[in-house]
Structures are given as structure tokens and as C-alpha cells.
Length: 221
Image 1: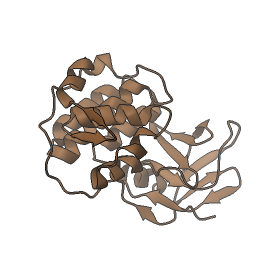
Image 2: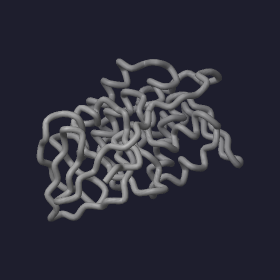
Image 3: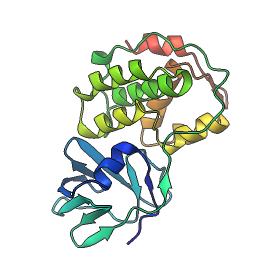
């Protein structure tokens, strides 16, 4: 079968088009290959920087392999489908300076959620440093420091964030200023991502919502 789309990220494509390797099932929508986690995103769900959009879900007992341009879950073979660029396109103007650098040990791996809330705040902050200010070196340092303190899915998304590669609702926010899709992303992940982006200098106002980046950065310490 052909996937609806797949992320064009070099992190994902290195695994998808590299040598075939075996992985393991972390959950219905998450497969781990080494230290990298692939997300299977169902129809209608936001696309992810580590994602392949398809109607397949995995079970713990499934055998999974990836490489040579395809993903296999038992006897089901999934081909990539059209590429989706996880780096958003938007007008880079009107942003505030980033707030104080977030204290990684106080956030990484901490909080509720499949990706702990602290990781989501850090991912939003890291992505904001890159996308709003071009501070890739600092972003990479923070992401690498946080990645070793948390689970493999969060570590994967942090490394994507350091490349400016983000979930689809962040694209909507940056392109249109509409924060509502991000606020409804996941159980609480979108709210934490927004907090991180605002800490990096994104001024948000939506339906009366107003968040000050410096206050959030200081409060996260």
C-alpha cells in the first residue's frame, strides 16, 4: 500500500531509504528503529516531522522493518507516498527577542503525557530559536542535552525541532497566527509547545489569549 504522505526530513529519510533494519513497536502509532521513533499518523491527524501518514496501526507482537524505501509491519508493506516538508513557510518578522534560556534539567523528561510536558515546552523553544531567530547552534545544544534525559519519542522530536521541523499545527500558527489548532494538539502537548514558542519570542493573541514570553521562560525554571 502507499502512504498518504511522509515527512521529507533527512532524519526520517535516512532510515526510510537506508539499509533495511528491524525495529520494535512502542505503541499503535509509534515504531522505534535504534534511537529514532517513526510516528504513523492516521487520516485527519496532524502530520509530524517524524511521520508517515497511513491507515495502518501496529501491535506489540508485530514484526517491523524499515529501509530500501519502504516500511513493513508483518506482511503489510507501506511505501512512502508524497513528501511533506516539516519546515514551515511563513513571514519572518514581528517577533520578540527570545526569553532567557530554559533550564533543561528542570524540564526534560518531566510532566504528564506520552511526550512529557517539559519536553514539549523545550521542543517549542528549540524550534522557535531556529525558526524565529536562526539560532541553530544553541537550539541543537539544548535539544541534545534534553534528548539524553527523556524517552526515545521525545528525543526524536527534539532533534527534529533543532532542524526547524515541527508538527503541522505549528505550521498553521506561524503561517496564519491561529493558535487554536496547536492548543488542541494532543492531550496537552500543543499547549506546552505553544509555551515554548512564546518563550522563544512568538507573540500570541487568540480569542483573548495573551502570553508573555519572558514570564513563561522564567516560570519554567
